[in-house]
Amino acid sequence: MYDIIIIGAGPAGLTSALYALRANKKILIFEAKNYGGQIINASNIENYPGISSISGFDFATNLYNQVKNLNGEIKYETVIRIEEDKTVITNKDKYKGKAVIIATGVTSRKLNLPNEEKFIGKGVSYCATCDGNFFKNKIVAINGGGNTALEDALYLSSIVSKVYLIHRREEFRGDAKYLDELKKKDNIEFILNSNIVSLNGDENLESITLEDINNNIKEIKIDGLFIAIGQEPKNAVFSNVVELDSKGYIISGDGVHTKLPGIYVAGDARVKILRQLTTAVSDGSIAATIAIKEIN
Image (cartoon, rainbow, N blue to C red; front, side, top):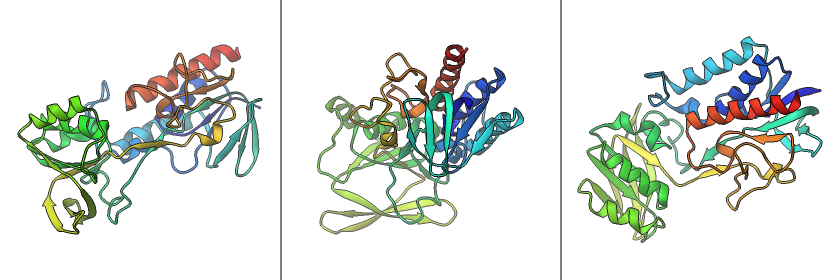
């Protein structure tokens, strides 16, 4: 029997563990792949309060080591179900907790092109607000047609020298108000009816190759590519114990409570306005603190 079982070893899950361990609770963390979550791929973090600059890997590793130094237990198993009595079933065994915190985060949709993984942190990013400042006065491209892509273009237009906004359709899906603002910018160029078909470079991304609907090919030299084609939560396996919105995010009402007592959610997996490192660790500390209080 564990006091708190935490699903996910990203910033939200590890912060939950840190708070629970400091309250002398017996915890167990499940992680399907590697600790750290998406932040581990960030080449530099410069918007976390109190830390001028740190790599995503170092930040995640420091947090992981804090948990391990307090004897936090981590099992690399895939959770396939949570029962209403807070039994957690993995691909290897069953575990019982007094409380469960779901901190599975989200996965950025990828283009699934050769070199994409290679260039993450070396020209390819999935978060303009996280990494935009590293491309100050440089040339970047954004791939996407929804509000995220349009907002990213507006944000980056005040930082970089030029933005190519690339969309595979003839019209953007985002709000007209964002599009109207973008049309007023003299450093934004729209490229419609086009797909990115290759990412080029040696150690770092140097250019992208585009193909339009007429099968015309052209290459654009850029310093950075922001992929904004959406994120995917992986919460379907929890649908028996939590309520999901139309996009698959966990509905948590006042913040971290789900519809079942004793089951909480923290971080990007839940419905929220802002998905950033600061809000993930905030959720983690709140979920653990509430869980501790309710267990006591």
